Every structure is written in C-alpha cells, then in structure tokens.
Length: 118
Length: 113
Image 1 (cartoon, one colour):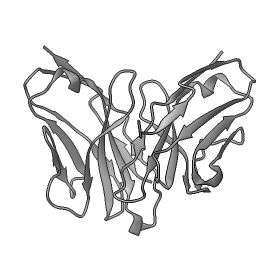
Image 2 (image 1 turned 135 degrees about the horizontal axis):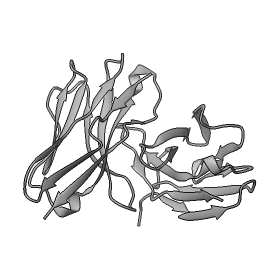
Image 3 (image 1 turned 135 degrees about the vertical axis):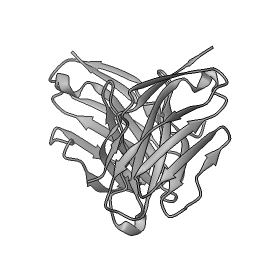
Image 4 (image 1 turned 90 degrees about the vertical axis):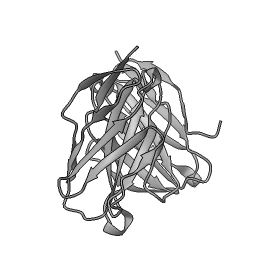
C-alpha cells in the first residue's frame, strides 16, 4: 500500500518570502501522480499543482513549483513571494496511474499548516 | 457555479439516528469519490463510482455506511445508526477520469451528539 508522509506539522513564512514544504511517499509503482492540495480555513480543498511521475520536468504553476525526486520518493512544494492568502493547510497526495491498474483513490498525508506573517 | 456541491453543509444529529448527505459533481465528470476527514488529519478514502457503478470501497466503510449514484449523476452517502466516532467532515470529489486530479466540494460537517 502507498503511504504519504508530511513530517512538518506547521511552518511559518514572512510575506513576500519563499517557503518549501516537504513530502515523502512510499510506493512500488513506477507510474503515478502526485498532488499538492490547499485547504484554507473553513473552505474547500483546492488543487495547487500536479506532477506525473514519468515526467522529469518539475511542474510549475505561477508562484508554486515542485521539486520531484523520483528515486528519493520526495515531492516538495516551493511557494515564492508568499502572500497572506497562501495561509492554509497543505496536503500532499498520491494516486496510481491508470495503466498500473491500481486504485483511483487519493492517498493523503496528514497535512501541514502554513502561516504567513505580514 | 459549476463546481462540486454538497448538501447539507452542516448536520447535527443524535447518536443512533440515520443521516444522508448529497453530492452533485461537476457536470460531465464520470468519477465521483467520497472521503472522510477528521480534525488534524488528511482526508481518508471511503468509496468511489465510475458513472453509476461503485468500483471500490474502503474498509473504513462499515456496513452502517451505504453510497449510491443513481443514473451516474448525483450521489448520496447514508450513515445508519450514527455513532460519535462518525463525527467528521465528509468530502465529495469528482474527476473527468483523465490526468488524475480530483475536484473537491465544500464538505458536509457531521456532529453526532
């Protein structure tokens, strides 16, 4: 079974600075998807960024980028130019790729609370 | 609003009562997922549908839980004889079946007293 680990329960960052959130996972599959989701207080889960395991290029979405290290099974999220609106719980998640025949469920880490200080 | 919607947003019930939640996925998304999230934890998978077929159920989904997706559109999740341990946020998500990503609704927060 796949597992996702987020070892830092909380982090804080100053507005306009850069912060990196860490995530490790365990799997025996070769093809899969990895995601970062954001859950603001009392608001719904929002997809931040996705990465396909077969792609060597790290995904980027505006101020958000990932550092995907497949051999190390590491998937960190970098937030540049942090904004007050980035304050939220961040969840790392894993999903099997369709060709693997595995489950379509998302496997989440426990999450990390990000505080952005003005 | 074309996102995933859930109803009700909040439900308070007494132990032993039955409750039913509804999820309306994004139009044309053929996959629909239910998750449960307790305080301080990430969401845990409960079950998912492809169209009207329920393809996978977690061991978390005891026989007191049942989910349906008639006609492959909206879905309902029913909990019978609720227990205090059922108190959680119940999240619904949908997916078009490609690229792996799932889009979440706002959730239904259940409190069992």
